[in-house]
Image (cartoon, rainbow, N blue to C red):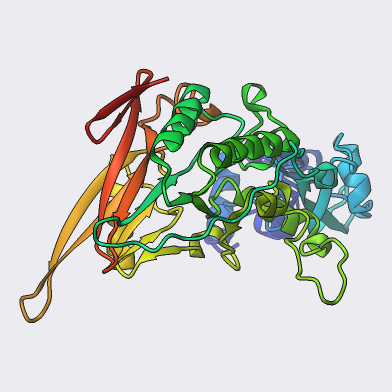
Length: 427
């Protein structure tokens, strides 16, 4: 016998089949011993190393199921004849009334028969599922009985520039209730010309990517009703303020869930006559919050929320924000660097006001500003997903002159007191 050969060489195909079935070295040694082949785990490992078989055979995965907040994966037993994906899911105790199958992969390989008499075809199924959210049960917020007109925009002058408030991240129904009352009182006193809802008016925890949290279990309808109530009270407090709303990543959860689970109903609208203007699709934040009845303009991003922007002046824009860096001001500065112009953002739940001066090729100077507005949500508890978060309550304002130049200010809420410019307000 050639010295490079091993007694196991003639059983190489059988050993590969055992590996494909997921057998351990000890189990393979026992199988070979039953067939009169005496070897050890060390000898088997040496042979496997020489053959390049140290890893488990291709195709086989450990059977079982794995469930996260809104996704699941089922891996069937390796068998010769597979059941249907639906049967495999139900065998793992998952109800198809609650889960939707969206991807099925079948692996196939040659394995050893249980009686060691020949080879049989082995098949295993990997099934991916997503949780079904009953979006069809969502209804628009209840109407309290008043419809608001869209205010006319006032023409600014050098002596009387435009006054804009930028506020967001209420995460309804998890907004700070005392802060909300304070803000409404501030609106009543200051009567801004314009208002920007910077995004994440509502939280939608039921359709988030985070694990289920019983302490943060507001239903979709509770979120809609609470968000509407917040905006209604903003409008009541300052009826001459012209409001615009941006979408945020939490608002976006409804759009993503609709696309994932009800794609054919994504753009469905109420019936209309040919001469009537089209309304917002039914399963959208503008429709469910009744923004048209509140007299609030919605800035449609025509895609994901990150693309939406409000141009406040030739030099200043407002966005919800998509960059989240550690530390106050870091996200605002990174957004300014990315965009190349002054910007006000929400998203981070922090407050900051930073500046950057650039020098062009001719030595001309340009100073830019970036602002994080803070949040209107409860900070304590971190909305169930952030531990002792570095967040600040409050909002921002912009004073904008006719030539487009501007000044930014922060209103900061601490320990029940609002600090804004030279004032302290308590409600």
